[in-house]
Image 1 (tube, rainbow, N blue to C red):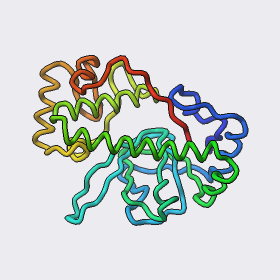
Image 2: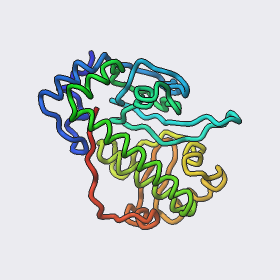
Image 3: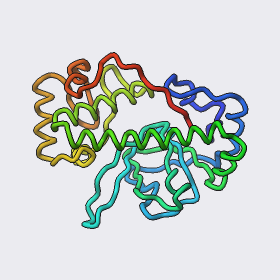
Length: 243
């Protein structure tokens, strides 16, 4: 059964801005259906011009860029609530690829309806602009991290950001969250070698701060992790729109 927008389980989470009845009605018209995919399924291919846009309802994935050498570098990680395909909708083709890491369920939207949103629902169109602005901010922060933080601080910040998102999405079991990625994926996203990443994770285990194994991340000392990441432990979470 396809999930109706009014019954979307993500809407009940405080991390997402509330929608009024008119906005929910439009989103139901905007939604063309749902898609379930297996791990390692390519959802969006760099250079492609997909007629569809997606919001992640369940599961996790990653965005990556393919280099001229054929190697790939991870841009960021995809969690429930993330909107996929905006580049193709605006720039006519994707500038990166998106792949499922776990089984995923996605809400599917018809890209042709995108311009209807801008014409008839400016509030929702502003939400898309907000999402694009935040992605730009995240990219800028990532470049700053790579340029000025050592490997320990980079990994600590990535773990805190992921852990906070998982907490807001109700994905935690105590102090543990699913993190079904490879060490190579984390290394790629932070500009580190696999060897350096492995050694840094060992240091975190030995210090009793965090442990990542068998697809799960366990934060043993959140305060120490924030200090290592150069983040304020008492910072307020930021709400965001849900498309």
